[in-house]
Image (cartoon, rainbow, N blue to C red; front, side, top):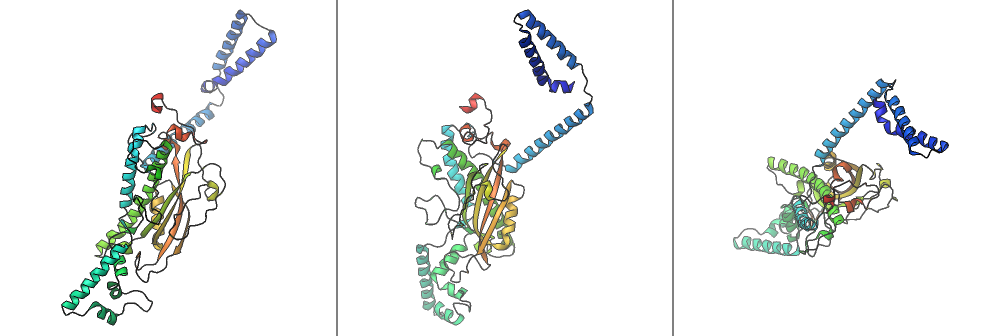
Length: 417
């Protein structure tokens, strides 16, 4: 009986086809004859309904298998939702993306990105003003020593030596070098170096975090575009994952130093500088492989952005979207596996590639001071899979309509207003 019910539509179509052929052959035109034929078709239907399938056991087993798969799918989806832990910065913003909500998002986005950067306990090398202030401080110290009849720092420095045989500045040498002493003082106040994104006149170097320029708070009533808001929200979610992993490994190192009664500063941290975090757009199902040359020095590093460019070959499709992102850091090479584990464990992130090179020893202790341990400049490419059943209910219609692989969720009329 179940077999008949599941295939009732096909059976009726077959009966209808037979009736149609009969009508065409006999040339029936009168309504009574049509009714008669329909009654005959109904009789055939009743006769088929009374049939019992001979393979009922196989059908029952298949039904059980389908039910088990559906239950497993529901469990996986529920677990996936717990792993993502993502909430929009503005409640009720998606999927309607009303203008007033988009204006509110622009403000919330700026605040959230500043908070994200501040969580790194970040700082910068000393400015020329800092160095000049340190020079005045050293001069005052020398004057105080001379007035008190104590040996001057320069005399002590001459006896102890300002550099090692390897030409590395010593503590005595750094004490009397305003440039080095200012750099060390700045490093001792922070956990890692970074470049902010919110100054009116940003530094020469690129910002560490990706801040969408279109989200700059203009203090106007003009709302940002919906697709720009959606892109900013996705970017914030992914960057938050990365920053939280960096903060976790650095905080653990800081706590260990505290327990050992040692200084907590950038020199003992696994991640010593965040050079850049950059994201791709959604990775399309088809796209030409890109040849992006690795950036030199402190320039931002960008992902390839195509499935053909990476070993997984994962692209956006019917069930999910894929975003690639690249992280460029200065860190202790020994801690790279730890950071990768923190990022990829219990998440939908996959490490695509990693490369690094050594950072020259800062013998003069000027600019950025990374500490005594050898450091590397590392670039890591990742991909993030965004399950459609989790994110597409939030995705505004005008966003999903931009991508031919996304079927926009069906929504009530009031959800589109």
